[in-house]
Figure 1: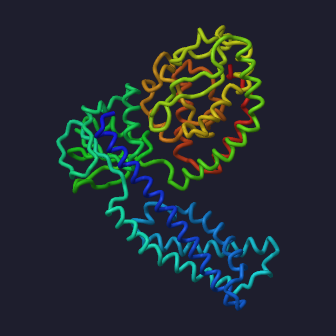
Figure 2: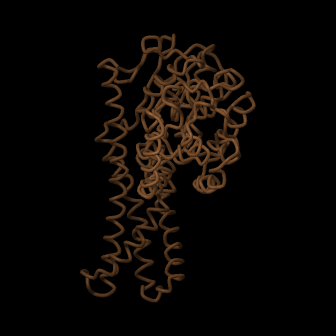
Length: 455
């Protein structure tokens, strides 16, 4: 990538890190205000400002408040751009915290150990302090960021458009980003460009709008299109860029809080699982090496989040000299390429275990649409030729398991219908994501680890 393009991506990444630091700073400020309030109020109640009782109570309140606030997106771009709205949310979150705290104290049978009046006064004062702190904190952050908190990218696709000198602008022709839904490598390049930005605006002729719309819907980003004339198909909102109206056609499917929740869930399960499964994985690795020459792991390019390519890891289950790295030839029930060890680990899904490393690295998630190889076909057609909606399934990280697998859509895709069944399930998962559904899919996977279509 040329130096100027690298510099643009570096600047975009630095803004994203700055916002993350700002969210953490606001979170620490909230914690400090709550501790200070409880320490003073509880201290005055017992005539001792050095009493640790207030700190202990504050620790419980902070834990409950952060769970509620993070789930309510209190630490997000909105908190920095609209401090008055964020202040109102802080008040609501503290009220919910008070109710949740009282419930916890009641069921834990420790309510009599805490004075209700100082506790209530501390909650009320904390709520107003948190709300009042939003505006000066947001002003401080905006001053440091010089009023620009987001990373916007303008892609000019055959349309003349004058942008401000500081804007990130890419010419689609020069960057080889002309929309082509039949070119997975073009989508990979686009995904690499977009991964550091929060918003992309496309200036294009009307005839290219439909293709850009589909590309943006699979890119895990807020995507907007500036086109001459009015075409409202697929539009989910209206925005503006450089005093020009834009059509918002895509948004990332998950909020920052949901993404954090999903990532924490992945790490909480993956790290212990790798430790517990290490002996089994070592035995499998030795068995693979003893049976046939070649590497233990099978690495293959797969389509990941934002349609970017990544290397998936699996235990090698086929003879190395007959392995198909493109994925064009699906495994069959009596496939002669599969080794004896390979047949066992494929039938029991043990061959998928190294993908836990992909999850740890952040390439994949435990639950999500299964990643496919570029050579995969259904009815002798590449997946994206069967349905152009195929690219929209990559707005989330791919998963070791997913809704399609739980519903039994596994094995070779011999007909177009095989892919369409999986695609419908994947898009349903993305559109209706919830943490509880994530857990249920993972539990449901235990029932289909050994499956008649796993070969």
